[in-house]
Image (cartoon, rainbow, N blue to C red; front, side, top):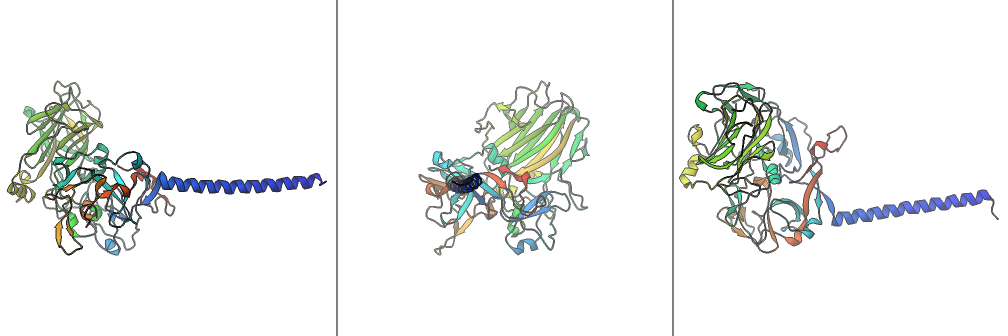
Length: 497
C-alpha cells in the first residue's frame, strides 16, 4: 500500500488534470458560444468609408477650428485629404493641416443579426447587408423605401407613392447637420456675424437679451443672414464639412430650406412672447410661444392661418427652457423642454403630431429666382430664419441652426456603354420596389454609392442579403483618446438611429 504522502500527491495530480480539462472545456465552450453569438445574434463591424457621415464615420481626420473652436471630422481618402484645407462647418474658416496628422479609423458598431428574422426592416433603419454588386462585401446604409413602394427623391426629400415620407424623431435627430451655432464665436476681423439684432437687443455671451419690449406690441427681431465661405450672402446649401477636403462640389450645390432652430429662452414676465419665423420659398411659418400665466395660447401659423395651438402659455417665467422649431419634410415641429406643446387645430399631422402643410406651387422661373438670387435682399432668398420677442423682456442663451439631409439626384454611368443616365429613384425617375426588396441610401448623399447608382436591373437589397440592424457604436473612431493606443472614446458611445 502506498504511503499517505504518495496518495495525496496522486490526488493533487488528478485534481490538476481535472482542473486543466475543465479550463480547456470552458475555453472551448466560450469559443463555441462566441461563434454562435457572432453568427446568429450580434456581430461587430468597422465602418470603412464616409458614406454614412456624419451619423457614422469612416477613416477620417479630426479638427478643432482655429477660430471658433468647433470640433469636426473630415473624411480621409488618402494623402491628398491631408494636403487640402478643409472648412469649418460653423464659421467656414479653411483649416491649416499640420505636417503630421493622425488618421482615425472608422467607427466600430454592433449589429443585431437576428432581428430581421422576426420582423421586417423599417424605413429609416440603419442596416448592414451584403452588397448586391459584390456579395462578398458588407455595406451599411439607411433604408428609405420598402417592398411594394414607389420611391422618388424630390428636392432632397424622400417621397413614397407620391407623398413625402416623414422621419421618426430619432432618425431626424441623427440627420440634422450644423449650419451655425452662436456658442462657437469666431474672432477674426473679417468675420461677418450671422445673427443680426434689431434695436433693443444687446449681445450677452453666446446669446441676446431684450430688456424692454418694443412699443405697440411690435416684434424686435434677430435675423439670420447666411454667407458662403467667401463671406458673400448666400442660400443655405447642402455643404458637407466631412467632404470638404475633396472636390469643390461639396461646398454645396443644392438649396436647403428644411431647417431647425434650437435655442434656450427665459421669459422675464407673463406678458413675454417669443416669436420664431421661418420661410421656405413662398410659404411663411410663424411660431408664437407665450409665457405661463398668459391669456394667449402658443400657436403655429402657416401663411397667417392657425394650424395648431396649445391650451395655455408654455414658457416658464423666470426659468430657462429649451425650444426647438423646425420646418422639415413639409411639416412644422415645435418642442419646448423636449415636448410637443401645440395640438392640432386645422391641419393633418405626422405620426408624431406635427402639423403638415402643402407648399404653395412654384413655377420653375420662380424657383430659379429664389435659388439663384440677385443681390442680398433676404426676401429674394429661398429661406428666411428669424427670432424675436414682444410683450415683455426675453433672454436668448444661444441660437443653433441645422439643416436637414438632402438626398441628391445623382447621374449614373452605365457599364454597358449607355453613357450618363438619371440615378434610380431620382426626381422624374421613380422606382417601384417588388416583394422582398429594400432601397437604401447613405446619409452622406453626395459621396454614397447606393441604390441610386448601382448598375443593376434591380438596384435594391433583396431580403436574402440582409445581415442585420446597426444599433450601437461601441468603439467610436479608434485612436489615441485617453492616453492609451487604440483606446476608444467613451464620450462617443451611442445608439445608432
